[in-house]
Length: 272
Ligand code: SIN
Ligand code: FE2
Image 1 (cartoon, rainbow, N blue to C red):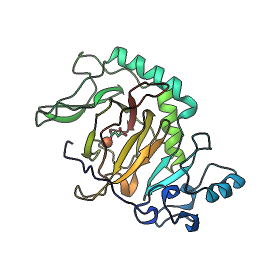
Image 2: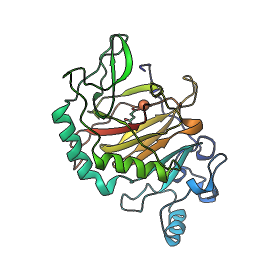
Image 3: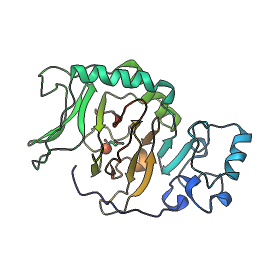
Image 4: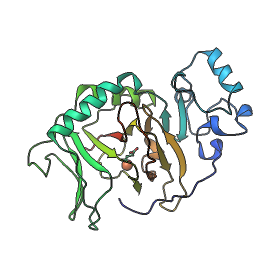
């Protein structure tokens, strides 16, 4: 899981690497038809038509945090749902605190003996753990010897709703890994491949400080695109993108109204 992530800035074109079209200088002329491999049903903006047109006129501007959420393609079977989790953000964060009180965040050790800079905990029927013996899903928290806290309903419902919105109806996660990032924390390029059922997508929720998501390819050497993930954004990847290498660049220091100097990420998985 731990390899050196590419850290250089990558100039990207949205219709080759499928990154946020709003940042592309040519995007005023960009088609609103879905890129190859993205069904039309999965490529749409959650905005009324007058806002979609206005959006084009201001393509060069960064997204206004108050605009309606949008679905942006990342690759075949992979999308960013902008702001999707915002309506339940406070409840998600309060629930993270409750899970953390029962199963405290900890810095896992990689099989190679390195301490991960991300602090992790889990809820659900199984939790992702790493130690000198390897990576695995464990029904029991190795620190306490008792099962992980159950998956809270607000978590499960959000994950199911996000997956359905991304074209994966019926997603039934049995595990949620909770990652906590402080300024400087990074997560090196890796694949999520410890799950037995690779037909189910990964649903990843960003809360608190913004991060740069590294979205690579199916080969470790593929140069990753850099995608900004802000509070409330949800990334869903499955199908042909299920084993794409991904990671998080070192977190920039800032202060978020709800989380302070912290980013929280929830990743929902179906492990069996
Ligand atoms: C992960 O890859 O498990 C987490 C990604 C993130 O923190 O956004
Ligand atoms: Fe991952």
